[in-house]
Length: 345
Ligand SMILES: *Cc1c(COP(=O)(O)O)cnc(C)c1O
Picture 1 (cartoon, rainbow, N blue to C red):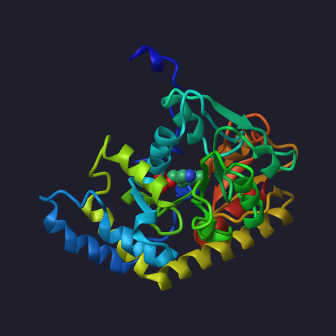
Picture 2 (picture 1 turned 60 degrees about the vertical axis):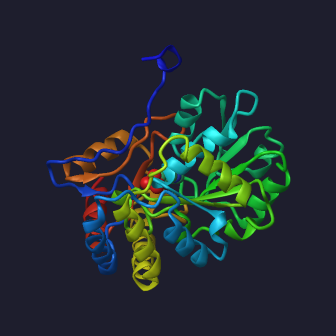
């Protein structure tokens, strides 16, 4: 290992058990399979796997652009939104321009900062777990904010994001909208006004395609060009043929998408209410998960009790949030199984 990485602490993904069958509520995947049209599209494309995919991802960029109301030159496709984020760290952070992000947020931001050997500053959430916009004014750094935030599920309004952008004209502001379809407000309409805004989205959560590894960025064309420079210096064929057609078909089946998202939202409200009745504290969530704790019981013990009952959730062994568990919203049946265990605690 080269000296500059001898201390690096890699990201720890949630468990992906390959043997025992758990009710999997730990990595914010969709409980629903991809739409039938997506599966058909993948089958139709598989005979062409002898050929490299389109390195410019033109078809998918166009589909996303039409959907988002921007032009294809405003769209960048990544191998998961993780890759879009990684390229943004490479492109927009430097020795004299580090990054900043909330202290309680997506764990990968600090890992990418370390990987790029740049300074990453963790900005504390407020005592009530909010992102305070003024804490990011004139940051002098590239700003990363997940909106809705993870693992809290809480979101900023569009005005608050605008406020952050107005006070950072010299810095790139990255809004990570992995969960926006479940109740947040997208910042995409601001892209035409702010050339320092990059909105990052994923097919992994609301579009039932975590296994396809597909994400995208929407921004002004300079930012998109810079991301492409990073990509063509690293892995020009970053999205494979099957994922490219899957993504296109997933966007085109709006009815299936809406039905899945609406079901998750309904199940989230049901689960939150049930847990509150059982004496839990539950943060308000605009995402496909809830963040909950119970007075007098450690997060670790909640996690272990559920695990023994065959249910996986996520616990973060981290100051301020180690009492909480993050519960991905699944089907009604999965949530009933979870509620039954938690009611007994
Ligand atoms: C899940 C998640 C991602 C990564 O998504 P992929 O597209 O699967 O790489 C990025 N940001 C946040 C906040 C997430 O929760």
